[in-house]
Length: 294
Ligand code: ADP
Ligand code: MG
Picture (cartoon, rainbow, N blue to C red):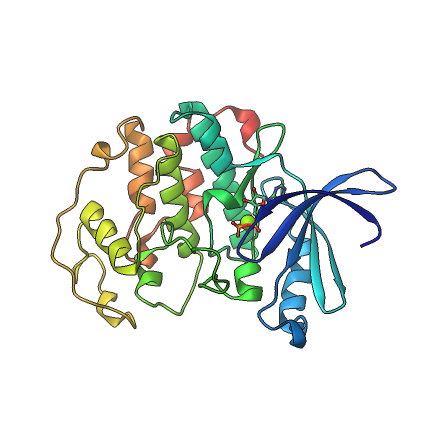
């Protein structure tokens, strides 16, 4: 810890407090995330420590780099690449309108980062605009990859924060215990629509029931044909049979190919949701600037 000079606090989140800091010798600017533990007396669980250390190997331009993990006095500090802002702050700064080329390149970066992590069997499970950071050069990077697995999916662990349900897929809202990469693809869809709408969240539910209701009102309530396993979900419950609303009415500025991609991500049945690799090949990206691809 003495290697770093702490500068200002940049944020407070689900797992801890984030500080900007400077390496005393190299002068490199980093983000230090000090993790709060459920049980301070127990120290850092060795399983969590092992998970976190593996994340140091996850190196990709669209993933916020984890440089180091410092473990002392039963506390855990993660040393991350520093990014200038997050997508939520970016939305706040652009007054309700994100340029359509920016939406496309951010979405491509998001999918590239997801594809990379998913191919290494690492899930995010808590994607939201606050976890998408933007570098000085305008690259989008995914933060907090793999933390949910190490520390558990954010629930109301600490009374001060409200955990957002807005980016959670219906299977998880219905208590699915088997997580796979499809969880992140749903979140990516929600974020895509939010970017296209200049930062207005697509499905801002207030609790689990309201979240599911909003999803089904938009996409139509699933049935035996569209989601055969729905009734097997641990917390399945009946909803009225809403019929789908055209996505054009909720994302009016998105091109028709963009809407088609969105439709493929916002699929209630997890096994039918499009994966990152397929999404990157979608024709929506046909006219993307070649420099944005790796
Ligand atoms: P959350 O649980 O909302 O993801 P975090 O603890 O990850 O919260 O971070 C809180 C805030 O700190 C983020 O919204 C972001 O603005 C900022 N932050 C997190 N990581 C970094 C980083 N690597 N570089 C710069 N800012 C960061
Ligand atoms: Mg975060």
